[in-house]
Image 1: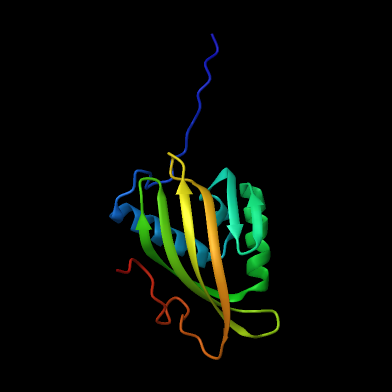
Image 2 (image 1 turned 135 degrees about the vertical axis):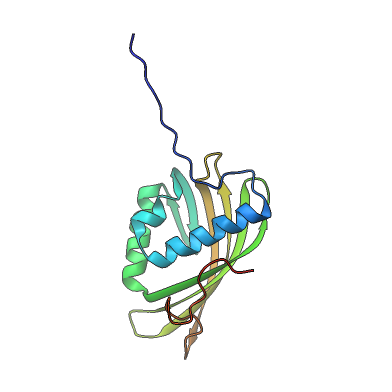
Length: 154
């Protein structure tokens, strides 16, 4: 008799979220995005994830990976800070800001809100991001090890 075993990977913490575990999820996302590694970041999403990022709509982990690869090729010296806003059992809302240098050499600071929905195994199924850019003259966010806030913040 042949027996098939299915391995289910879990991405802790998993729903239902508490404030503490929601904050852990936010910090993990910030750390991953600051790595600027499209493969690492994309692994936090379900295979069939649905994204809205500004005016771009994506479907699937592979599309997210390709999007992030292009994003970080264009956005030099990218640095991000995410802040927990609210949560329910399987949803988390965050505010964020990030800075980067665009291809024209301008320093940009982006401000935004994200709404995340997770599956039972802790993978993000839906990400909706609204983002606004402002051209700035100096950095507020600094590189890790250079005063950049890392680790859990309140």
